[in-house]
Length: 230
Image (cartoon, rainbow, N blue to C red; front, side):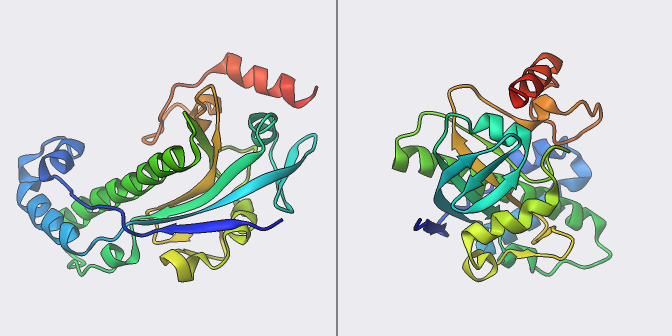
């Protein structure tokens, strides 16, 4: 089946120093570096995303086949049980800001820039989510990423990238032999329409995690395991 791929490279950048300062807990010592790094990022940053409009060909016991590519994950299979149209994607802060010159020994600027890059990739993903909802008349989406749960290993980044084609050429994101992405502040996954919000964090019992977006839900984890064996 043919696959539609679209690059989103006109994502607006309007970073606010006050927002970055809030993320850094308003530490006065950071203010000068934040102002300088935000000014630089607003000038050169070009966050980007690429997505594919793809279809689920087959539902297995613990896998799904999307446009001929098999993904092995019971949780993903359960999430896509009643879904036929999905959106594999990669979003990134962009190589432009990743290559911005920062003195190696300036820890404050490096710390600020790390937060800025994280903000940029989040804005790219949110822009893509809004674009998908508006373009495809979707009321709510959720997503899963390879490596976000033990159930779906990061090694399946290779299969995900294969659905999108030459991601490095399109948006500058390279997949390394260890299945990590460069620039590091990049995210990937499968976005799908859903009536009930899903976050991988809901099924992860790890207690200490800076990136947690939802509390662990033991009952929901049990429900996924029960659905996976039916």
